[in-house]
Image (cartoon, rainbow, N blue to C red; front, side):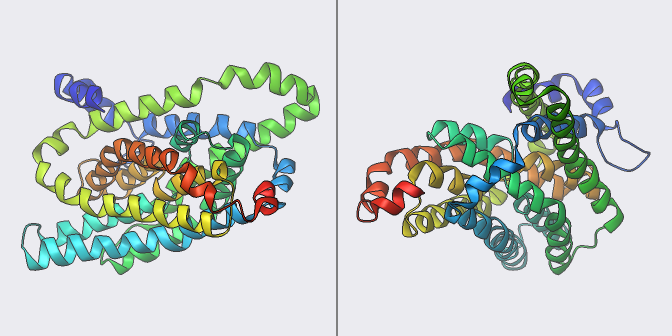
Length: 343
């Protein structure tokens, strides 16, 4: 993030060229960001054996809690937090933010919360000793739901916040940033496993893509902060104010998911990645969609970038809390040891 900001300040002309590289004139759909999102999602989809999801169905409680928090709590709670803090408190009551700008900030926060984390969650899961196959299954199911739910949720909540968005651009964004990489990964796996076999696919083909996701993620962070370097520097007070509802959302949703997992006696190595998915966001998609809908220097785009700025370090504290509370968490599970063993 710091290096991206530095690049944005020191190399404004190359950064402006990349920022303005769009699929079509005035579409605001950025080509480099789209390609990097494809490179993050495509390798992940290659790993998913949808036949293997049957094993997750045999211990569904962790997945159900994750889906409940991601799709029925997080976007709606963020819409409320955005309205209360940004539009009501900071704008109407205190007069710190102009009314129309506050509406766009709220729209950006909603876009940020409407998509569950896809790439970074594997880092969080690793840091908390999460169950990697189950984490992959949780992400896969969320991504499949995202194809159908992300657009309608964004359109509904952003509309309620008082902002009009071009629905055709939203639909195109979902197609480019979600449907294409998800479908490409699934089709590639199905074809290659059929022709070459599972062993060749997993031992020869998949390792080629092992570093791709993390490199694409790092490059995305670089570009996001390079593109927004001036915007962040010129609107630092807005960054501070927007961080407040985002911080509340992260801790509220992670705590809710973690508590529900413990209540339903879900194993700790499934509960931690599940609660981390519920707390974090698919910020790469959020930034790309906000730029596509409102433009690269818009208040909505800045709000999504503040989400990245806050989320990355704060999620490390959530990981720390999950690890530190392992004994407390598992103490509740001893009474139901047989159920605990089954996840």
